[in-house]
Image 1 (cartoon, helix red, strand yellow):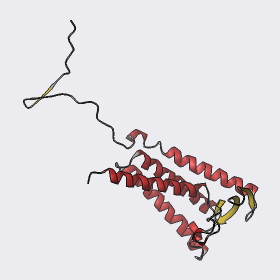
Image 2 (image 1 turned 90 degrees about the vertical axis):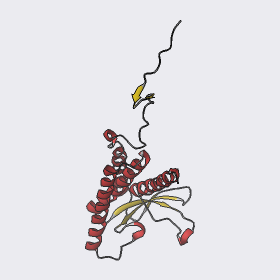
Image 3 (image 1 turned 135 degrees about the vertical axis):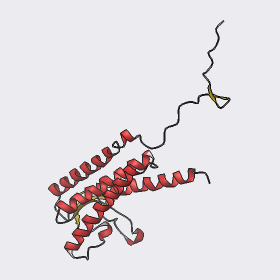
Image 4 (image 1 turned 60 degrees about the horizontal axis):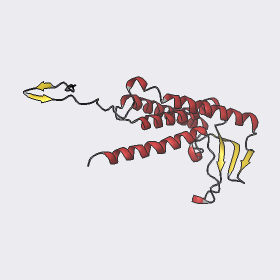
Length: 197
């Protein structure tokens, strides 16, 4: 008759303690894989710059190169020397260039530092931060190397909502910042709700 082997027991101050199973790994990435989400950063920068180069090469500035779904989607060639919604356009060009390069660079550095210093970030939050970094760097490249401003090329009809017939023209970098920013906010809110009250 076979006898089942008993699990080894450990003695701790006069009482028996059975060894527990494997410890559950934290939600974040292991330290050796912290670089992995930067694949998204690189992908966003490369896609952003390739699409902008194609627009500059094929569509004259201020023109519509392609339209789809009636006038819902336009692929155009526009330049934005300011930031989102053309804010800061009234500033003198040297001040504008300094502010819109220096401040975003500082912000990207702070995001990167937070990424590596924080132990509380989940996997999704790390990927989202890297998507934001990619978008931010993509537009910083334009501000440094394109004197006429950031290349924007996606234009959507907005049907008069908020008084706008069309949403302000944007690009791949802008899309990455917005989508990853929304994911980051949702993830942070979800994590807060999971915490015991």
